Image (cartoon, rainbow, N blue to C red):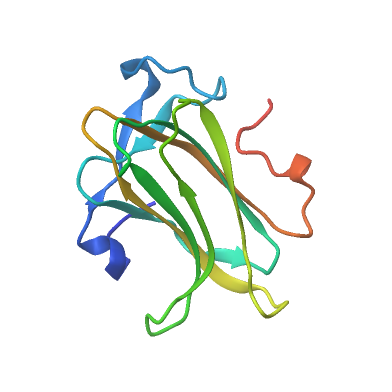
Length: 156
């Protein structure tokens, strides 16, 4: 994920990458040692392009211990068009909760075509300085893929 190739992300701060050993929260998987986090300024990251299609699902595993009602992370799936006029095809959010716990946010791609197309993910948000927001992992599951065959972590 980067913030240098996307006009939307270029004027925002990049997510910080931190280690679970620095916070008092158990990672959601034994193989997970690092997470991405926002800060109090608008923070953004964008994936490289990959193939997506209508009905596919983006899953984001995230944690929020919010201290402000303005803490949030928007999760977007976008269709990539040459020339920079991209199209939003999926939207989800990590919103403040009174129960700080790991969540899986599922964003379904909604497109009027059954064709496969180039897409990418944009995550952006912010949180109060005393809040803790962590993005552990994400995975894209196409309609033709069994979820059991699409793992965020290797079982070996």
